[in-house]
Length: 628
Image (cartoon, rainbow, N blue to C red; front, side, top):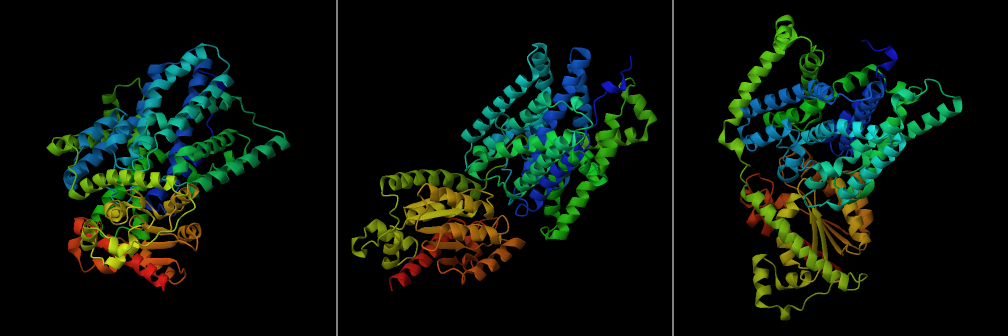
């Protein structure tokens, strides 16, 4: 029996535009994280959209039929999402088997967990950090979000049918869902660990609040009950709120750092609520945004956003491996073009083929009748063979063995944490306003002190000047590498360092320490290996530190385009600030490659000693000049 046209779900204009904004944000974040540090918020925008659309369709189905056909819902979701995911997984696995065999490790678990939509759970303990731009080693990191959506699709139709069957007021259901979303956000804050954010960032329980926001909106703001025509005053208010929500969403994309502590303590929740209001207003057919976001460019990207999202990281990772100078603007543009081409092929020959395949016809009849289906099936068979070849390798069943550097970094994290606790406890017991350090009398130095002097090639005068200095040290993985040596040399050092950190994270970290009374007289900064040091971020750091503290900023050494630019930038700033001292590690280490590990970036054990020694000598020299 055919349904009346009014019973068909309304096509919501503007939503493809929101999908386009989301995927553009994610791509720019992955290519140019300094330009759009909050671009990762495109993923929560996808989450809210999915929560709203799926819940809205389920409610409409229940209202029409008095029930929800759960099995039919599963079939629709599988046809819509699964084929493109499997083709991407198998294609990436085949490429790895043929051209990038060092990525074979964990491949069985990665493919299996993705096909079961459990990858995000696996990634909480085994995955790379989403914000580690240096390694860029995994072409699968971004797939965590698809697992959360897959888990939602599995349980949500059953929950919606039960809730509607209980005849509870729908607005009450909406508010309850917001409350559950709040619990999820609280878990996000409780489970946040700056040294390992994977549990908080990838967890289903900590990230589901975005999907629940969308679901709650569907119960209180159903698409079928919106008026096509509004009074001028109501329409004006609606459009004003829409423009504000869009502006705040854009501000979020430009400003919300995914490594800030406050992002996990509430800012992500607030930003997601703002995006939910943006979706609500765009959903209204009388709103300005419903029409403004409905254009050919946005609609094209929005309809292909799923395939674009799927192929972005595999392309970025593999191109970076193939091309030596892969960090130029034009090379990044080429990466985007390749992603769009693959997404177009996926959209035409995978997504649409399965989406439009009629269930009344067996697949083999469609295979004989349609050339597109023939091409898709043939490619799928070839990629299946390639994947079978890939997973047959022994490496795919095991995690990649940690190299010397990785083992050292893991050990150092624990050492840093333990040393920090001691320093913080001592600082809390002391007068929080007291920041001055005194020089140790060289005559009182013990044999252990003299052994340290020898270890770090310091004179008695230099060592005595530094021993009791209070220090706050922040940085990326290079700082993780060398921090234990700094803390051994200067025990009153608090270190905040993590792998993959960007320069834009530093102001927030220093501000947090300042508010706790833990920002010391001496600030050591080692940043810039993972991306550009922005002028505004640099200025924020110097403003936060103030003129009375001494800043020791170590330049970088790595074969990345931005590192030389960062070093040049820092050298120009040296003369602008009297309390800024550039520690020229790059000049020292370039003639000593034996001080570096296998990646030619991080100091090895000998290099770490030299790194700490260089900082110590610069600091001692500054205080010697000050005494004069």
